[in-house]
Length: 151
Image (tube, rainbow, N blue to C red; front, top):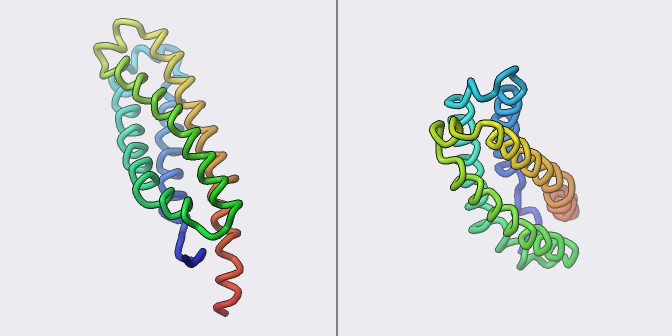
């Protein structure tokens, strides 16, 4: 398998889109009364999980299988570690989505919604930063020798 065949561009672009939604959510959460924005918050969270679900699906079906079969041992090990960690985070996200299906649920306990949203957004931001810096950078570095050889 050619290391150059794996590009992180699509995944990094997804991370940028997730980052924009996270900023919107954090802005709504920072309002003097976040509960007053329950509908806007629920919509932003739904949008966030929509793109993140697509992102996870692409990683699971395309990226991780290729990384786990990659000839570079460090890349395989890093991918295996990230894939294992993602299972716990996915479970947490699924539980959050089940607990907060929409504005009505939010209006019943706005303080818990705000707290849990901050927690899940923080976990997502940490995961994205780690993927960008640890996983995607390892992928990019593994591709450098192939790019240099092709010049």
